Amino acid sequence: MKILAFDIGGTEIKYAFCDENFSLSKKNSVPTNAHEGGKRIIERIVEIIKDCGGADRIGISTAGQIDSEKGAVIYATDSIPGYTGTKIKEIIEAETGIPTAVENDVNSAAIGEAVFGAAKGCPNFICLTYGTGIGGAIFLDGKLFTGCSFSAGEFGHMITHANGRDCTCGGKGCYEAYASARALVNNVREKLGREMNGREIFAEFENPEIRTLIDEWIDEIVIGLKSLIYIFNPPLIVAGGGIMNEKYIIDEINNRLHTQLMGSFNEVKIVKALMGNDANKLGAAYLASKI
Image 1 (cartoon, rainbow, N blue to C red):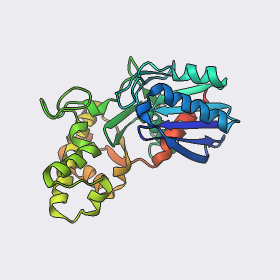
Image 2 (tube, rainbow, N blue to C red; image 1 turned 90 degrees about the horizontal axis):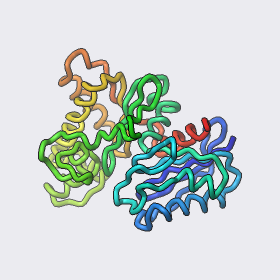
Image 3 (cartoon, rainbow, N blue to C red; image 1 turned 30 degrees about the vertical axis):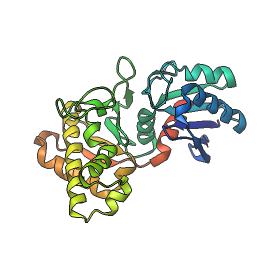
Image 4 (cartoon, helix red, strand yellow; image 1 turned 45 degrees about the vertical axis):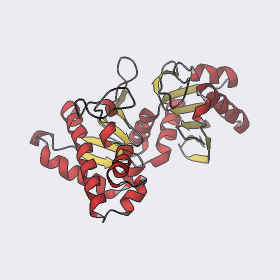
């Protein structure tokens, strides 16, 4: 079986072929051009499928809250205009005749890590990705838990600071407003007057002012994780997002958590996601292999 797997992000649509051994090949990407709207994005996906040819199944990982049974977007922010309500599976199958699986991006990444990566062999874990926002996914007894409306795991919108910073969701004090990679970048800009991305920030790790802001940011990550640990009592938390490649972060999270948690919760381990940019595509391909 040859699967064509897609990862629809805010900046790029990444795609690759996946064989029966879940080996990815012919990796490629095109700009998402999200400002053109959800309809145009799906048209572009259809064009790519037809140009590539030879796929037996299509797997799609995408931003937004996804009804994975219908393969439709329940809700998406205005970062992709008009995406809410898009019937991705229905459109692609009608245009190509190829069976298609669609899942939320963080859920897809968690499946990729569960089957192939950092959570392989662990039936119970939670997964968080730290980027522009914070996404989450929950695995219970070896199965993805999606809640009553396919939207479970919105960890980024836990309230960690009552009446705190404005959040893109319309609320105040959300976890991602303090602990996302974007929050760290914003703090550096606001407090030091410097425009830096995450990689540039950690390149100046020895700068005392930068180090202080990094440590304050890690404290914010720990605040949210403590709540999740007390709720789920997981043995494993997988942390993804490019910024988590900085070893200091994972080590410090583990060190701080294990001095702050009640003793009965100290078995939890925080590990870095292993599959990187391929996690979403592998998760989507795995789902597509099951239809």
